[in-house]
Length: 224
Image (tube, rainbow, N blue to C red; front, side, top):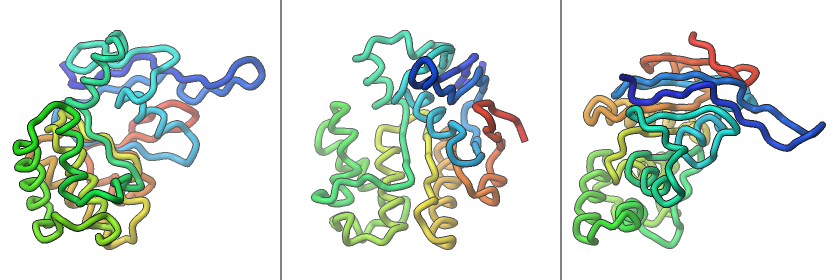
């Protein structure tokens, strides 16, 4: 059984003559531990699909299954717990809280999820060291470079040991060299932890390094 299964997914905004169909019957299966790139022009529905995969948004029609479980049949409380426990998010902009240190930012999802402070501290420190930030633990986001900020955002997404990492243009706000370094961090984490990854990117060179590359066009996915 595939880890993620998407069946006949559609998403429509508005109604009547203002109705916009963003996703049109999308089917997708993702094997556990694999890496999948989704490429395509701006505005074709890539981010919408990622938000639905991460249960941040609900589809108009269709279903998303994780390990055979239809997640949109969960009530809001169970869905929120599923998101916190099973899914890590990385965005183009790091969204770190400016008043907190790198360590505190990374600890936050674990604390929200009910972990004790000492446990969260230990996991956050270990992850930050794994991505080369052992000397930046107590620096606030404004004191970090763009690459350091994004690496902090990556390990914040990993603090709960999620089964899947969803990344929306994770290198889009970085220069080429820094973007390559951040991408290497993601690939290394996939190899070392077996984390399933679905990455939306405009960078076809980086996308070609993942296990699969899908192109979104007119609200549908096409295998490349």
